[in-house]
Image (cartoon, rainbow, N blue to C red; front, side, top):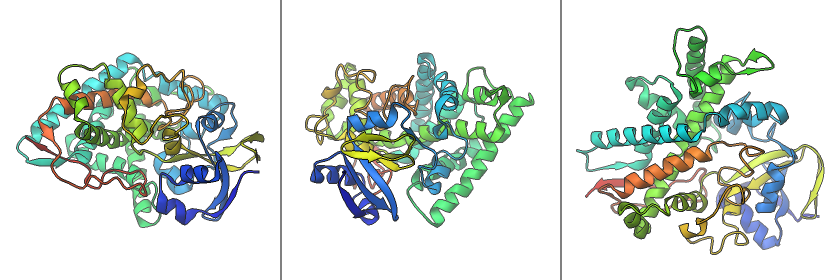
Length: 408
């Protein structure tokens, strides 16, 4: 039997990211049961647990997320809520967008928008990187997706996508407002889909807008509303990468040897640096699922319908996987590959992309962070004195200052 703890709602909120792994360490297990908001839940951690969670169709995402989270992050009809062949078919549409050439184009657009933003900010003494990175990413991904974004709507749309991230772990008026704003975002994108279908708007072949506007399942076009949800599932996560851009800037400042190497043109460790940013810093803490078929793991019998939460942050800091996990050490990723270790670096989920991994966004994440690290390293920007504290009881977390950058 797995150890059982009393209701953990307050402890989870108070301790945040380290909560699950701290309990696993204290109990000497990778599995324990408790309650969250009085609902029975089983927590799991580690590479083996991640493999079980993502492989073998043991889990479904249906009815696994609280509605306040689901409506902001995915909403109804999303690929994340599908299982089996329906999920595989929809996911192929996403994977078809993530070709090497497409990733290069996305990176090029990001650099164009970054340089344009820096030109606009040249006369300012300093700026908050989180805000600037979000706008740059939204501009770039909308161009890449062929989603028209008039200049007078950039701030509005950026704010709407940001609300989906910032309010995801909240309850009450802030979350309700974010959901209301998301309805407007969905209507905007659904309207574009309808315009493409009626030939009132041209979308370039192979772009996200064109692909999902014409995506068929069981011989029928998916509804404009579902197409909009999936296009948003590209736009919103791209904005969320601003958190990683902020952490990359922090890492370059606190470990200047990497900035100096990249600035000098030595990019042999650029990808390991990016992967360590993804592993080391907090992104989303955990992912929920419900058991499809009973199985045994860690001395616990998992029952059909059981609510299970996989510890992402704790697995990325598991001492059995990572030597000295609380140290920032890009060297650990020299020679590392997703295909050989699909269940260790799981900041954005586990599993192999073409088989059971649910988020196709790692390729774009790595490409965009490599571009951001290069641009930051070769710029005259620096971090003045500020509050760099990263609160681990806030989901998703970011330094209190949002990282202020200034020109030398």
